[in-house]
Length: 237
Image (cartoon, rainbow, N blue to C red; front, side):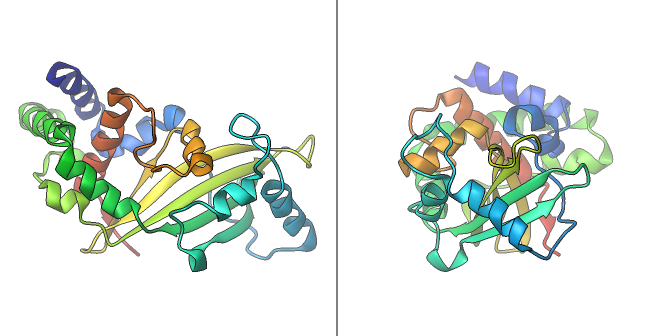
């Protein structure tokens, strides 16, 4: 297990692990840009309803996207929010956000119960010291030593899901992005980009960070993102 972990961590460090979310954008999905149109018209509301009432048949043919997200077990009811915007490249994006409740405890429980968490950190720390000199000054935050307690101590966690309306058929759409924004007690934050197939968790009501039936290697990748992201987290605006 340590050999596999070390190999993956080495790749992360040499590949400037501080930029994890950018370096692995192709695997984890592409985060789409800032809103250019803050006001919502009737046609924009129609686009939101297209997504809410639509299906992602690879996950369910009987549960709408809106039902899956609005009824996800871990979303605080008063934080569920749908938004429409257009990216600089002209993509019509529907975004869903909600603040998560139990995921913070899930992460703590996982850290306490799983030897994998401590093994990943130990391998990461060892290679950070060994290869830290290869990093630029701006990326050396990834070698900073942080305890498990600091990594799992979270003040807020927010789910982000994005969908793109197809321009050639405005009645259809695709899921484009899934991620979790994590804010820490010291007001630092990071965003973990998740594989698109983790959307299944929203339909099956399982943990979004550690879904059912994922491999150890997939879990390692999420842990590496959490560790490196915590070490290089930036202050909230």
